[in-house]
Amino acid sequence: MSNLSKNINQMKILVVDDENKIADVLAERLGLRGFDATPVYDGISALTRLQDETFDGVVLDLRLPDIHGIEILRLIKERSPGLKIVILSGHGTEQDFKACLKLGAVACFRKPAKISKLVEVLTDPKMKKNESI
Image (spheres, rainbow, N blue to C red):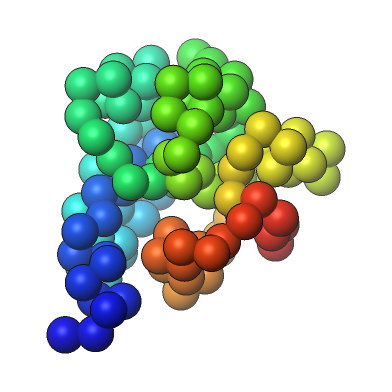
C-alpha cells in the first residue's frame, strides 16, 4: 500500500452542500477513493457534526440556506485552526475566494471540480492557503 493510500484511508472528510445530490455524489466519489466521507446539507448540521466528531478536512459550499459558507469557514477556523478546508462553489466570486483563502481555506474550486484535484489538495500535507481554480 502506498503512502497516499495510507493517508487517504485515515482521512475523514465532511462534505457540506445544500444540493443533496451533489453532497451525496461527492461523498460517494471520495469514498470510492478510500476516504471516509460524510455529507451534510446545511451550515448548522456541519457545525454540529464538527463539534461532535473529529474530521481531517471539509469540502464546503459557499451558498447554503442557513449560514453563508464564509461565516462557517470563519467559525471552523476559530475552533479548529488546523482543519483543512476546501471551498467548492458554483456561485462564488473571486472576492469570495480571496476572502476564503485569507481566512484559511487551503484551496477554492469552481463546480464542477475534478475529483483528482480535490483528492490532491486534501491529501497534500504541504498544501498552503494559495490555490484558486
